[in-house]
Length: 256
View 1: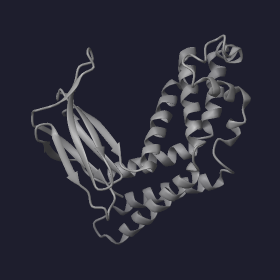
View 2 (view 1 turned 180 degrees about the vertical axis):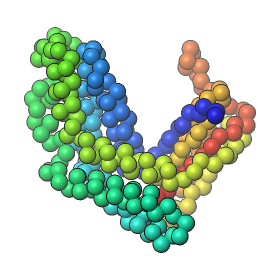
View 3 (view 1 turned 45 degrees about the vertical axis):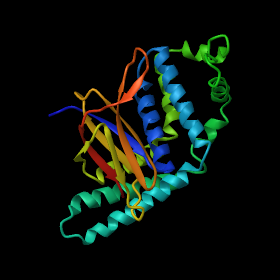
View 4 (view 1 turned 135 degrees about the vertical axis):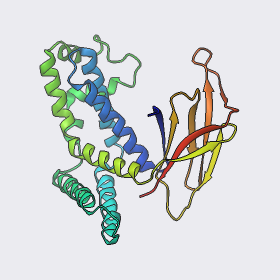
């Protein structure tokens, strides 16, 4: 099987935020149970980034709306004789369970962490390059010198505040990605453009390119159309230029 690189471009703000959170949750999870203080730093940095995103908008309401919207759309498929009813029932059950979990969480998610003086002191310094050095935050330096097991327990407790909504976002993105199969297309002279149906808004553009292709995909777009440009980049001089070759790739315009 040919190995591929997947490039994704969100076409609305909600999916853009969900993708960023998915990335941060994955990064935090990767470093959580590692033992070095640098892993603890990475996990905490991801947690603080997550907390910052939750401070800008009522994400709990946004996620609940998206769960309910997905459930409503999928429930209509029960009338389709060709649908896998067992699989459909399983997904609807997941949507219902996660909605119930989120409804049970009282108040804004992570609200108590915003009042945590230890976390707030670190968050205030993260905007400064190198601002979390040992001499800047002695309390943080002290915490980092504690046994790895203790640091991991603290980090897990903080991250657990977001567990239910992280699962919900993961499910929403999985359903979005699986809503459309990838289809083969060609970018002529490294360029591809597609007009979208505004009556069925595309949420996410996915581009799959064989790893052997010496170009990367640069996707841009909005509600009405999007473009894919294949670019060649030199990591040495930093210059980029558009490919002149015809590039075969796979495309998915995810609508659910």
